Image (cartoon, rainbow, N blue to C red; front, side, top):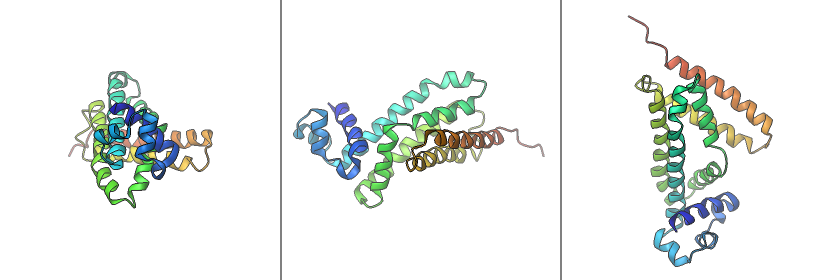
Length: 193
């Protein structure tokens, strides 16, 4: 029942936005009573942030399932960046953006998102460390991972204005090339002194 509620929440966030996602609407979509919904998630904020946490965990499982393939790749960084891009496609990212924007003016949601967002982000950082363990101690490694996430998210948000798939892919390919250069610079041996 919890999973049905969480999946219904994401569907509602995508279809109706944060303002239009009500606990009643979510319970109806999940096919459960309002009482059952309140038992599992007492408030709308609990419901939506739990849905994002649930999806972040699923996203991490998908990424970690690819780790061996990426380590064996001729281009592990480029392929990992492509996986990051693909993981941000679709309704999960749209629902997350709805919550980011809504948290700007909703203090209760902002407090919850301040807890959820670092958990979701740290899972991607851990993935990067698992993929490139020899380079993860570099003082700029964490910043490079964050920059990669910012590039992916920024391109996707900007693409909503045009919906031009060709332009979107071209912007991503340009961003991906520059991110590869960033990671390659981090992977260079330190100069001897």
